[in-house]
Image 1 (tube, rainbow, N blue to C red):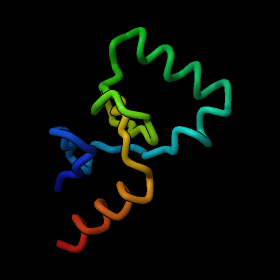
Image 2: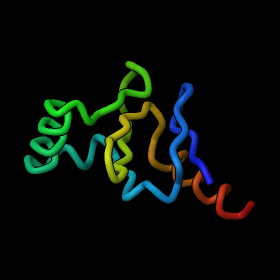
Image 3: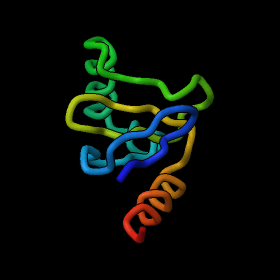
Image 4: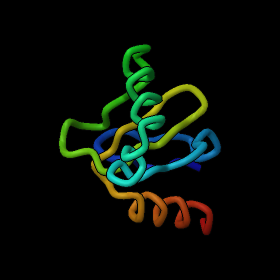
Length: 82
């Protein structure tokens, strides 16, 4: 099963570790440091360059998406029901 994260980006649902809201999770300094380090190591993929609303952590990359977490969760649930 795959989840569409926006634009032309789809990710295997089994590789997703977590999907996080950009506004609430980046309040914590540890999360900001984690994202900064990932960007420095070229582990972040921007789905597009619109306002980021969420990020999905996989086993090897972080995908920054303009879609909110509720939309991504809804897509994940739809994939499970198929």
